Image (cartoon, rainbow, N blue to C red; front, side):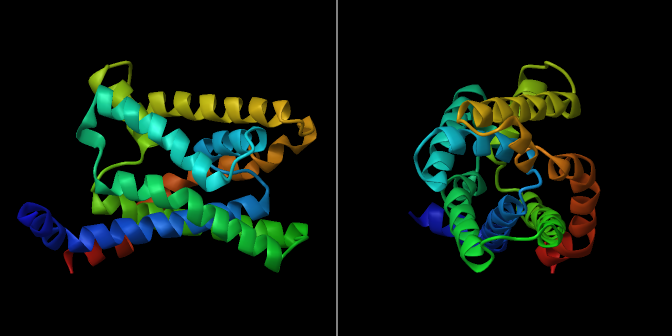
Length: 220
């Protein structure tokens, strides 16, 4: 117990940054869902599963990430930390709450509102990701998959493995979305322009937030 208390005190700022980062990311995903112009690759998969499986999104998110967590524990547990569990248990439920709230506030958003939500979602998720990553207390269960494949299994460079896992998520999400009975024409709502933008612009924007905000907070 003393070791746990010591760890919490020593890493208090990092834990708070991880917590804030996950909450901010979860809110941003809810905004993305309201925009319905495409989400990041993993959330594309989750959207497909959510359409097909009749349980709450928050619970579904925990189940899927628990499976990925089991993979990480078996393959390489070094990537797992307290932030991994914060992400696992909070992100899905906060996303669901945010999306439900926004739907009540804006039941029929116009295209202009959807575009604004998309822009806000991109900026906010990059800020949240910056806090979460800079805290460095473990990665998400999805991030760990590509890390294991590239680092431990040596299947290739991380960036190429990540592209492959992202493509698999998007493809699987679209297939599940259609199998759930949704029209093919609605696929861009889960894998659209927002998905493309996050693929190309999240990296540079996260790096900017790292330099200007997250790292200064950590060392202040």
